[in-house]
Image 1: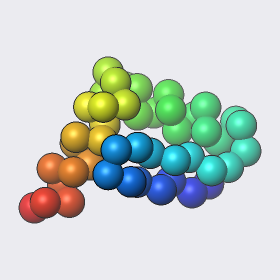
Image 2: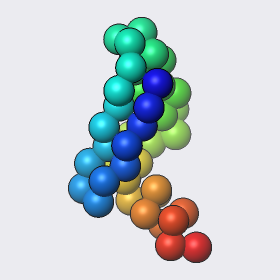
Image 3: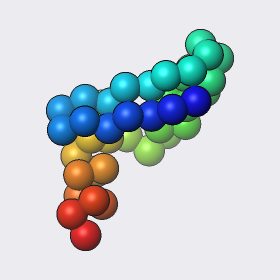
Image 4: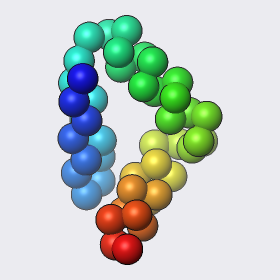
Length: 46
C-alpha cells in the first residue's frame, strides 16, 4: 500500500481491502479528508 500526499489531495494506492482499512483507521482520527490534509501539512511544517 502506498500513500501519496499532495498539497490538496491524498492518493491511496493498493488493494481495495487495504485502502478501506486505512480509511477506517484515519476516520478515527479525522472527520474529513480536508482535516487529514491540514494535519499532515502542520506536521510537515514542524
